[in-house]
Length: 400
Image 1 (tube, rainbow, N blue to C red):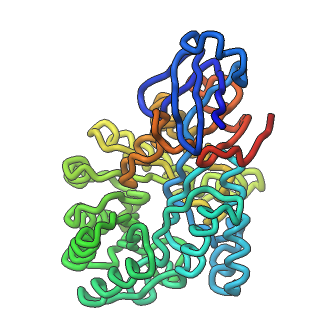
Image 2 (image 1 turned 45 degrees about the vertical axis):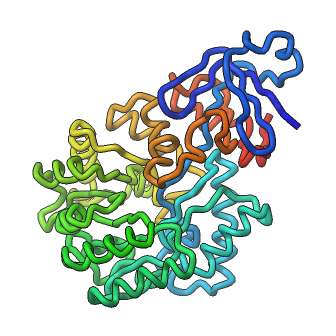
Image 3 (image 1 turned 90 degrees about the vertical axis):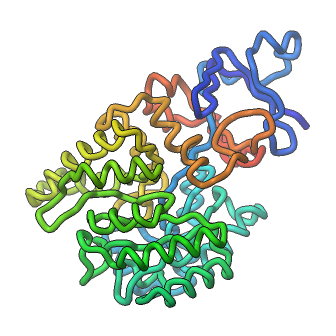
């Protein structure tokens, strides 16, 4: 049965806002949108949400569903049983959808967990967002996140791993192009694969119609990702042995290739805040890192690089129900408008995934809808004041 909602404003997730608008949902799809005045007498039977904003459900473009998001993420990841990983993932996904996230792009989890929960979500077995899953990451032997990955050390290893991940059901391929902070004896500033190896990975992924997400903290890894023409660069931190530095030619390379950047801007922010509240003095390099990274991101944005938002949910003190912080920081530190920040988690995110099925509100699109109190286009914090969350036309969470 069709349901119509009225709201003070409807933002389509891209460029259009309808003041005093309506949206009609039927059989899991959006069937009509427009001005309330267009409904005529039909407006009397619609549900009026009042001073609310209706917008697309949010897409968190970088999560790790089996990670604990506490102080012992690495220890948990190494020692959790399969059953515990599954329990953590189910709870993390429940928190995500209850906070307004209707799709997660999961960037690394055991295959048997990731793909089973993707199916469980689609079948309504669990309360969860839609799941777009890479499954196990590709990494070098002993490389970053080897404990949720396939270890590969040659072009032939890489091609076989890509094919096996697609065979297992991967929606996209995730590669750890550099080391990372959650794996001992890896170095975030250093590349884990050669340019030739990363190009081979990307070429075979594209042959199998899979997009590629490349974890890149260090600048050498970013250079290799540019050569491979990956779909998204995760983090894009411009790390060097001397700290975070900006390299103009690398930035232009990202822009020229049309590669999306998922800056994971809020990753570590809650840990930083907790340390400050506890009176723990942060190392100088940590204190300067956010400032340097945000400056680099502003430069990338000025070059026309498109950002997609993902908060790396699951890593240390980075929660599945705190995704809005990423958008808030885009507004505060990068200077994005509220509309542009929201688009990084709606329309632009969907383009990076490669779908036209969702990510914007329009007739014929999947009805993944978020309704919040107040004007989210004037106050980005309104995204936390939720009225309801709708997934595929069903209200999953109702706070009214």
